[in-house]
Image 1 (cartoon, helix red, strand yellow):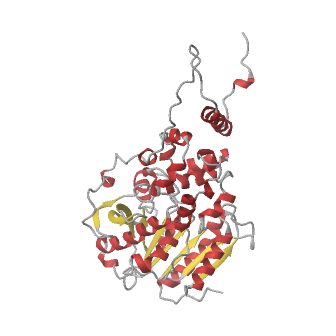
Image 2 (cartoon, rainbow, N blue to C red):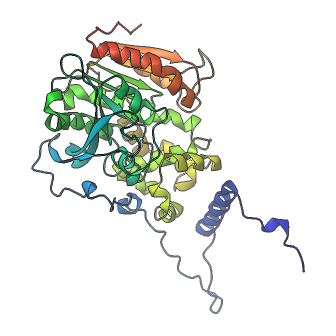
Image 3 (cartoon, rainbow, N blue to C red):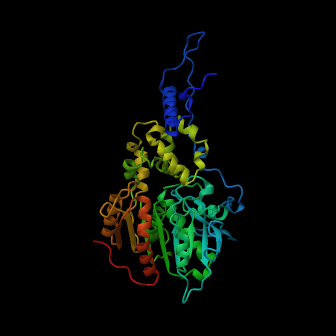
Amino acid sequence: MRRPHRASRALSLPALLATVLVAVCLLSDGPASADPVSGFPLPVPAPPRVTLDAILPAPIVDDPFFDPPGDLGAYDPGTVLREQPTRMRALPASVVPHTARRFMVRSTDSSGRPIPVTATLVLPDTPWPAGPRPVVVYNMAIDSLGSRCTPSYRMVHDAVDIDAPPMLPILLAHGWAVLVPDHQGPHMAYAAGPMAGHAVLDSVRGLRTVAPELAGAPLAMTGYSGGAIATGWAAQLQPTYAPDVRFAGAAAGGLPADLSLLRITMNGQLGSGLFLAATVGLAREYPQLLALADPLTAQLATTPLKDQCTIALAVGGIAMVPVEAFTTVPDPFDDPGVRQVLDANRLGGQIPQAPMYLYHGSSQVFLGDEFIPESGVLALQRQWCAGGANVTYVPVWGEHLTAAIAGAPGMLDWIADRLAGVPAPQGCP
């Protein structure tokens, strides 16, 4: 009996993806086949088009809290549509005694259309010494495509804490109330900045209805990486979209202020899994991008890939497949429609009223963020400062993940001072 040849081993993920790409290229670019009997060319079917419905995440069916609320046109942004007390498996009350409520509000997407947005309010049981308990809006780095990856679902249904580092219990241990918005919205539009900003601001508005005792409380905001996108956009849009919402300060770390810079550091690199996921997230919010999608994208759009969470998407980066492999043009970044979407999601166009605290893994200190270029954050600070904002920038040691840990103590001290009423020091050079 012959032993199987070693070449029969299963292909690795990168090799498998490369094989699929080559096969698709051969099928799509090769000459038309001929009928073996008549010799006449056979008609080539038109390649499948990618539709918005095909790339949207599967809806949540095992938790009626997330059921679509119906017509939203009659409601103002921030109106609470439903609410319920909840228990979080990801944060047992034995770790930090607390109570929690989930709620849904009417918000607005990037095109001005009404959408439902969910959020979770967590209140520590420890009494606050005097005055209203401060509130911290904590924008988690969701960085996912599946509906079941959103915080208000995962914290309730999953026993594993999705937070790294564990910022939620740290914030609660300070005695602060914590609001966690599901800032990617109902379509899980990862990296879509304006929509995320609207979702955060309308969640704060809804907080006043859910917990009226916190309506006049000091309010601060923080987020890292994907959560920093929501934080930066909420701070930037607040003066025009929600002038009734006032932040004592907002802190953002590892901030992708300019998504176009990620073409060099993530596209086709180890960060390509999350880069491709962000591309899908933007296409969900800006479906005009789908005009550039090739037949391979149409096939992948029907796979479980569109419902994955952060870890699975990040691991996919080992294949280092560039976004160009999924488009009908050789350089999608040169397409006017792509440039328009990137411009619409570049921070800096408006000036935040709240004092800002930015921190980033910097080569000025040690290592440096290998995924999110520091140059984008420095440019944003200059632009906001030139417009009259107060923006502190703190370079910290570490690459993208360790910089979140290195920058946390300074961020927490800065937020604590703002919530205590201490004026922010002038941070602009």
